[in-house]
Amino acid sequence: DAAVVDINAELGIGALAQIEIDTELFTADTTAGIINLANDPDAAVIVNSLTTGSASDITYAQADEDLTIQGNGISSAGGNILVDPPVNMNVNADVTTTGAGAIDLDATTTITVADGVLISSDAGDITVSANHSAWATSPLTTFIMNDTGSDVLISSNTGDIRINANTM
Image (tube, rainbow, N blue to C red; front, side):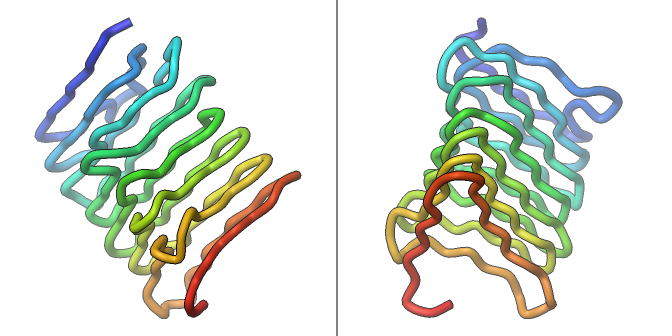
């Protein structure tokens, strides 16, 4: 297990094959090119930053354990973002993609989105999917897409879905 993993690249991380890591705290940022990581942690994981400055995709796969997104969050300048499937996911920082990029946040149990967090895609679909529960913790949580016919899908197989909003 690495205590902290900090990966910075100019032309992508894991473009040819998924990079396997084993850590509970990491950042992975690239100015251009995809990020493709698979984590096999022994305890809960904190992601402080997972970003690409281009329209490249971000794929983060995690075997078991909980995941917290914090710090600079997850962002793509137009590519798709997939986070799949920690046990529970706490989204405490923004998850955004510009352009046509889609966002797909999956967890095997529960996804919790903290106060003031922005989950945003300009023209792509947003999917938040948990097998038990998915909820936003306050009316300040925002799911945003431009009026381009995109969808926001929030699903739960067996639990509650709670979204508080002043307007929908």
